[in-house]
Length: 204
Image (cartoon, rainbow, N blue to C red):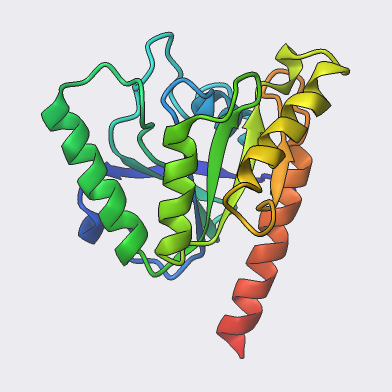
């Protein structure tokens, strides 16, 4: 997929105020230090479409970006290590939950996971919640460039083994790096495939 345009549309904490366009959308979410904003910028080939920061938890609203004038990339607040109060985290949790339960335009979520670390309970629990609520999702392993070519496959295999303790099969996944752009074309190609299916179903 070629990215011809990527425009910020709106930030808000109320699902009812999300864009009314009947375009397909894809939500990116993960722990707050997973490199989500950097990956979004890499995918869109923009330096600062999504705001990056040395301080985890900078994204605190539902952010809609209109891509190629016909689909939305949705940047959701990170969970886990954001330096916010308990009350603020509860607020995040509420509107994130509302988004996934109420947003009919959502085609799929992409759950970002730092490939350098052991499987985290918070990630596994969130993916279980998505599955329980019938939200389709894919895993995106980030920061692949931070591991050696020999170490990376071992980390991915370890994650697979942990997932298979609870899941019948490993959810589909991508291995990416915002620095080297590894995996970016594959993620965009998959979104393109999902878009084609979405628009075909809409026409039919």
